[in-house]
Length: 302
Ligand code: NDP
Image 1 (cartoon, helix red, strand yellow):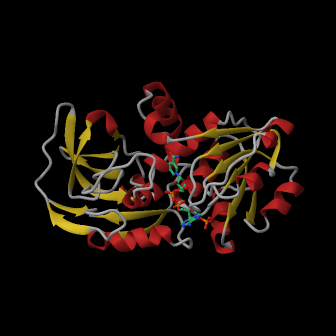
Image 2 (tube, rainbow, N blue to C red):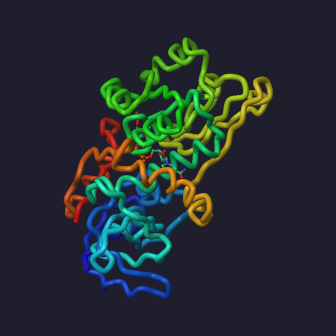
């Protein structure tokens, strides 16, 4: 089979002919049709992800494909950017009706993360949530899931041209990062921040109402600033970390999320596919992921 291989960290991918995977106990082989790219795949290629994978490895953690003719989505640690990947049977997820393979490849990470992060924050209907990077894959999912949970969304992005989409998806209010402090103040603050930028944590905390919660999901801006806990005491604020990967082993939690998401996906929840790249252009797809002008999920199609 053909696969894109990260032979050395921080270097371009190399297209290689590898032996077809042999499934281990409890595993099946997925004939890959589409791969959803994640910011985490990029971090893994740099060696800067929460778990370090030693090269050579095949990137790609989210895919759609066929097992014995039936289509499934799948979440794997890595290895999806190939014609085939061996997947533990329990990592297979249903493909909701009404989703194309590209849309289906865009749902698992973004929609599970959003639902579970909002749950972790204890977000209640009527509360206001700030969604950063609102035009991105996670952001477009977050706006929709928050709405479906009865939350009011303030969507923010670096570029004004990424904001109308958030509005179409159900954000009540939108602002560029520049205009955000003023906008949030005018609204009386927010109850929950889904933090994916990571750099200006103090700035994000200042947008919270007393009792507000910040869920630390990502640090896309690459810098992590220290936090003075006194800032939390004064207004009874909470900062909590969130990482999807270990939560996937919590069967009851995943089932709860899927029970909420699956009937709605293809209906009121639609994964946004920003661009589809052919398999041979995987490196260009990664470039698009890093271009802050993209919207939705970048998908590689086999
Ligand atoms: P996106 O499609 O959202 O793309 C990344 C977005 O991040 C961009 O659109 C951009 O929006 C923003 N951004 C901020 N700084 C940068 C930068 N220096 N370079 C590129 N983009 C930047 O990607 P994902 O949906 O895959 O991920 C979004 C965030 O969520 C990431 O931080 C990721 O690590 C995190 N994440 C965490 C998970 C977890 O389990 N903890 C699971 C899934 C995602 P803008 O320009 O508007 O700021």
